[in-house]
Each structure stands twice: as structure tokens, then as C-alpha cells.
Image 1 (cartoon, rainbow, N blue to C red):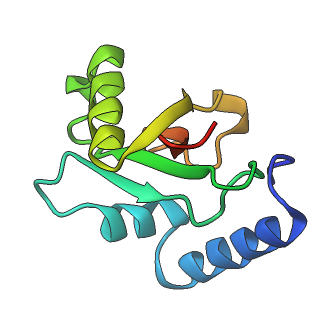
Image 2 (image 1 turned 120 degrees about the vertical axis):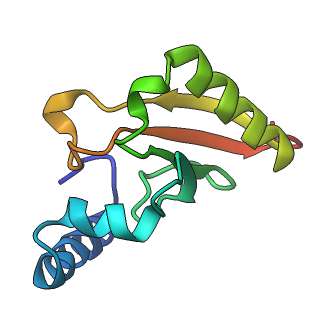
Length: 121
């Protein structure tokens, strides 16, 4: 569990993972079905279990379909994130991929995007 989340968010995350295990072989199989069609390369999604952030900040994830991840360089990821945020009038605060030892989803590459409205200071 993440120490960066509120306890109630961690509890919801635990329940969500258990529910996914009840219907799929594991939570990653659930995410593959939920996020991607056969030809979807990437998806932006609000993090349903966000880290604790200041008010007005958003926690979005960029999920890469593992079938296509070899085609994604760090610069392509960065430019895709920046373009997406600009279309939503959001300002990038931070983007990162969790270190392997703290990842809860190992088989689907994903980046955490912390952002805020462009008008926020």
C-alpha cells in the first residue's frame, strides 16, 4: 500500500484489487481488458486511487498498452503528456514512473501525472 495515499483511499484500493481477482486471473488482466481495445496504444485516465495532493491538483495516469510499449521513448511519453495537458488547460507539476520496488502494477507501463489548472498558482 502506498504511504502517499489517505488510509481510506488505500482501503478502497485493496477492495478494488480483491474484486478484480474475483473475476480475472489478477488485477493486471482486469486493467488490460478495462483500458485497452486490441489496437489502443495508450490511455489517459484519472487515477481512481490518487495520492494525497493539494486542493485543485489532479492525479492522472498515462497507461501504455504492453503490446506497443517498445515504441515509446521517454521523449514521446513527455510530449504526449504535454499535448494532452494542453488540450485540457492543465499545467504539468510532475510526471514519473514509480520505481519497480513500489509498483503495484508491474506488467503495464504507466506514468503518474500530477497537474493543476493553468490558472492556479
